[in-house]
Image 1 (cartoon, helix red, strand yellow):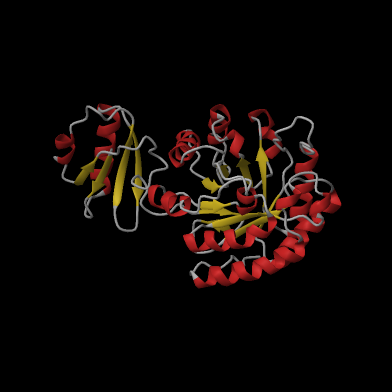
Image 2: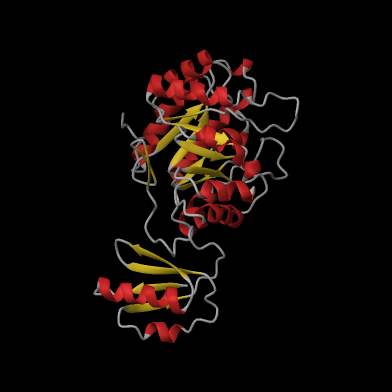
Length: 341
């Protein structure tokens, strides 16, 4: 349920209403002061609440029932876009972020060399897998803690904030110095992990599951937000369909749909979505035109020698050329690539 307050509502009136709602109606309240209106979102059992009784309050403009099961992630509860600041890089604002780097952290030379090349080309953040979920138990699964340490060295070298994936709540202490914790597609519905991440004060990049609906993605975001962490970034990385010519099928429509349904920032990962390096450029440009807040692109100095997903990773030289077109498209739609240093 959402209570829209009148423009002239005083702090005293609002405070009294919130106290009454929490004490009498036993619901959790969330006061959101937007640009155009102020609302109180109610979370809990509101089925039997009498809307006419609430409307009788002098400071109430209207009362609306929300049918969607996700509340905190719902734009109705938070009309203005959520803006998340990560070491000066802003997700959800008027700038485009470009997260780039290798699928897996393989060595100190590899990650630092790639990080320097990505920054030179215009990337605003560095990605790299320290823990890698792989279909085969015999495939390379990352350097684990050593991989995170190498990412931190690359951040020190370049100044780029780092994004890396977590696979278990038991590893959370290793991520103390990580700037954005990524939840991969296979863990999107690992609810115990999501609840633990909801109790930490770090931005969470939540990837859509391989066969998950947008509502399921938003419900996973709700798990994190219900525990108190509102710094959630949604990521569309392609879903499994009947089409075998690409690794997955990139759902570009997810961007405007998620923007309509939720206030959270939206990222597109064209590398995992297609699995084909030459498709990264057109999918990136399409994502920018659709209104995404960031791109996550895989870059490797020697993709042919990569220990994971070499076919979808760009060389630094190719990435630099792609970044030129990304920058041009971003300027055209009025959301230029972030140039903060």
